[in-house]
Amino acid sequence: RSDDASRPSWYEKMLLYDPVVLEDLTGWLNAGQLTRVGYDGEVSPLDVKKWCESKSLCCLWRENLRGRERKRY
Image (cartoon, rainbow, N blue to C red; front, side):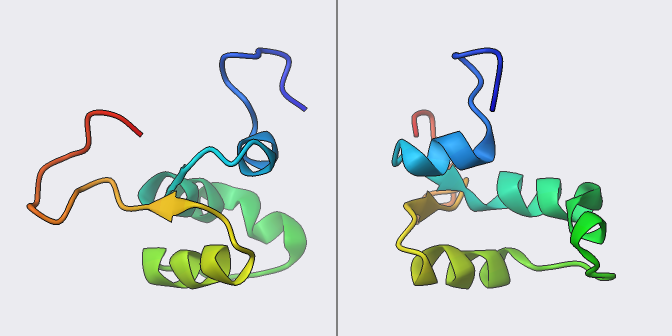
């Protein structure tokens, strides 16, 4: 659990149905979180998207369809 209510953990974001930014979650996983569970490799944002969709999590890309970065999530 997160001690700061303004910065929830990934798990708390998922429980609150906050949209998960795929690039952020992928970066967090590749920064060392996967080695903690015994996976010795990297994942792509597409793999993370497939996993999120299989778990019915709200996920989105950082850029919209027009190629601009989102201002709000």
